[in-house]
Each structure stands twice: as C-alpha cells, then as structure tokens.
Image (cartoon, rainbow over all chains, first blue to last red; front, top):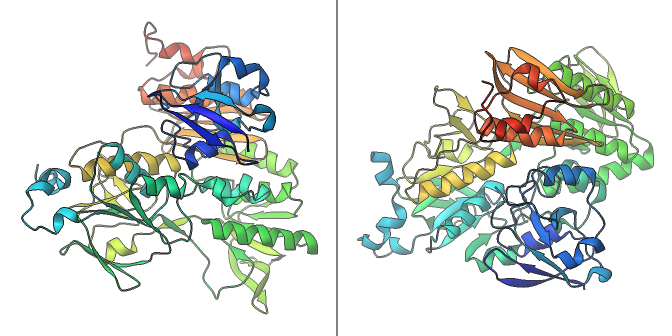
Amino acid sequence: MPQVICTDATGHTTSLEMRPGWSVMQTCVNRSIPGIDAICGGMLACATCHCYVDPAWIARLPPPSEAELQMLENVVAERRAGSRLSCQLYVDEALDGLAIQIPDRQV
Amino acid sequence: MAWRSRFRIARSRGQCKDPHSAMDPILIIGAGQAGIQIAETLRQEHYSAPIVLLGAEPHGPYNRPPLSKKWLLERHDPAQLAIRGIEAIRRREIDLQLNCEVAAIDPAQHTVQLADGRSLRYAGLAITTGARVRLLPGPPLRGVFGVRTLDDAQALAAAFEECVRRAAPLVVIGGGFIGLEVAATARKRGLEVIVLEGLGRLMSRVVAPIVSEAAARVHQAHGVQLKFGVQVESLVGVDGHVTAVRTAGGLEYPAGCVVIGIGVIPDDRLAQAAGLACDRGIIVDACARTSAPSIVAAGDCTARRLADGTLLRLESVHNAIEQGKSAAMALLGRERPFTATPWFWSDQYDVKLQMVGLSHGYDQVVTRGDVDKPAFSAFYYRGGRLIAVDSLSRIGDHMVSRKLLDNGLSPLPAQASDAAFELASLLKPQATSAS
C-alpha cells in the first residue's frame, strides 16, 4: 500500500498506509493524527483538514477544484503554496511517499 | 458559585474520602459526534482518570451527514465514515463499549444501570443521546425509512436498488434538509422521486422564500416532483410492505419506498426519567450543564437556555462539537460558554447550501450573486443588523460571513448586495465596521 509521511505541528512524524479509496483526511482521522479536525467529514464544507503538501510533491498532485480553492482562502492557519484540504487528496502507488505537514490549528 | 463546586470532579478526586470513587470514571452515554468530542477534549485537557464511552449502536463514532448524501450513493467502506478509528480511540484509553443500551440513570447514587444488568458508578456523567427520527403513527411497514443511523442508510440504499429494479418511485415525506438530500441522491441513482411537503415551500422552517424557490427550481430541473400543502394521512401497505402514501385530500401516491423527513425528537428519555429538567430536549446552560450536579449534556439531545430565557435546539455537527467541548470543560470544573455563531450545510446535486447564524425573526433580506443560476447568498437582517447568511454555491460568501458574524460585524445591506464590494475588507483591522 502507498504511504503518506505525515508530520504534525509538534514535529512528530507518522507513516500512514493508504487504503484504496480512502482520502488522506479519512486515514488521518482513523489514526487520530492530532491537528486534523475534519469537522464536516469530507464534504468540503469546513476547511478544518488543512495540510501543507511538501513543496517537492505539489506539482505531482491533481490541482485543487474551484470549491477547494475557495475553502483554502479561508483556512485559519497560514496559507502556503502547498496548502490543500486533505479530504480532497487520494494517494495511489504513483504518489507513494507523499510528505505532508499538519498546521498548528484548524479553528 | 455553588454549581462550580459541585463540578470539581478532577480537582477533588485526590482528596476524596471514599477510596473507590477515586477510580470512578467519567461516563459518556452516546458515542456520536458530541460523545467522542467530550472524550477527546477531556484527554486533551490531560484528564487522566478512566473515561467510558457507551454506544448503543454496533459502530464506533461516525459522521452522519454523508449518510443522506455521498455515502448513500457510493456506499464506500463504512469505516471511512469514522470520526475517529476505534483503535485510535482505545489507544487514548477511552473505554469504548458498543451495543451498550443504558436503562436508567440514578443521579443520587452516581450510577448508571445498563440494559444487560450491569451498574456503573461515575464521577461525572455526560449525556449525548442524540435524537430519534420522528415517524408517522400507525403499524410499522417495511420500505419506510428515517435516515439517522448507518444501519438506516444501509437499509435505504438496498431499498433504492429494489426500486430501480422494479421502476418503483420513492416518496419523500417532508421537504426539509434530510428529505431533499435523499431526493437528490435518489435522482442521481435514477429513481423517480416525489416530495410531499405539508407547507407551501421547501425548508420553510429555516430559509427565506427566495432560497426555498431556488432550491425548488433545482429539484424540479432534476426531475423531482414537488407537491406542496400536502397533509399525509397514512401509509398504505400490502403484506407488511408500503405500497403508497395516502393524503388527507384522498390522493394516493404509489411508493416503492418512503423516506420520512419531518424532523427529529431529541432523545431526552433517560434524563427525564432521572428527573433532569427537560423541555423537548435536556435543558442545558451555555456551558452544557444540566439541572443535576455532575451531569452535562451535549448535541442533538439538548435544549440550550439562552440569555433571554428562551430555549434553542440545534441539530448540527458544529453544535455537537462546540457543546461537547463546553461539556468536557464543565466536567473539569471550568466554564467554557458556547458562543460561536452556529453553522450548517447541505449538499443537493452540485448545489452547496451553507448557512451561518439563525435567521429567525429577520425583517429584511438582500441577495448577493446570481439568484437564477443559483449561485447566491441571502443576507438576513433584523433591525438593520446582520443575523444570518444562507449561501448557495457561494463558498467564499459563507466563509467570510462566518467571520463577520463571529466578530459582530454587519455590512450594510447595500454592501452585502453589491457583489463587487469586498466583504472581507470589513475584517481587516484598519477597516471600520459598517454597523
């Protein structure tokens, strides 16, 4: 299974196995990764599953939808070039090793 | 304050004379959104004594909103609905017990009786029993559904397939959020859908007519038949399975299956039986405290007493989370009033309906954006102040409006209705509020 390397706001790094069809957000909340609130459960309604994709990986992901971009304009933590909503990220073998960072706050 | 001293569970544990009570856990009845929030907040706040989370369902805490929308259509792995994975919950030393029915609460003895005969002592108790679907009177029939639980949604999804096979229509009773979300999902699955609404427009309890009308146009454009002012008299069944919905006007709508979306009943039965103050919901203050010492409540089962004395019942994820945080803090003897502006959302087809604030009692509505498309927001005012905003596929409006309302800012109606006016400019420190 492809892996996502997830670093939380305290600097702790976890390697997450990505089950087929599971979003990065779903995997994070299942493992209780601190800092991913995901209030709306992946419905693109809350912008509380914000993550920073490692700069080396940004261009390898499908670009955000218009709705995701609008939500990203309103994230609480600093918005960076790699800002994405983890509920919109799906990882296959081609993205094995994707590195993300969790911001220090979501609300 | 007397109330506070009664709630100093964590601090008083060490000095407790009864050696057993030092080990008594915080019990949480109900493993939904509010229940898991309380458990997690307690652990975040370094509460280290046992926490027991009692769930009546066979599933761990899961997200309910997708049940009437995305999940109902795609039926992906139910584990993907989890709010927290069961293993992760247990790693935090939260003792999650599933299939666990509570029979009674004894506030005087600080005990909870389970249906299986066990009796559990508690140091503090949280009631997060949620709400039950309001059903129609009459004998139960197969093919009639509320949408509340994962099991409800699983059964409904199977009924959809049966309806597709038999080319039988879905009749939805109630043109509110749940009914309309199910109607949209059923249309995507290819079912014929009829929505019967008792009043004159959709979602009339919460949105302005202009929003109701836009939603009606979207549903009609997707082929849903909307019938207004229809009073349902009874469900017609053959061999125990529903076959039609009969109206007070004497009409019969044939139905392969029926979804009832006429609201929910806060589940305050245990609290009522235990003598807690209830009024269509467990009465709580802004800090989620009930009328009984050491007992808090949060989420859909509550009716929150506002400063003006009225009771507010909110059925939403945001409310469950915020009240859950307040409830956990109250159990630790701390006051964390829930003051954030409430927000809600609904997805119907590709229209994202997002609501912030409570529009009840508005005296003016202005719109921003394209009403016909629809991609607009309705700004609700009372006495010249902004009180709520409903957005249809206007995510930016919604997110900015949440900040405006949380900060007590009120754009002028002329600014709100001018799509060229930058609402976010009101949030900048140098900008002066228009109010």
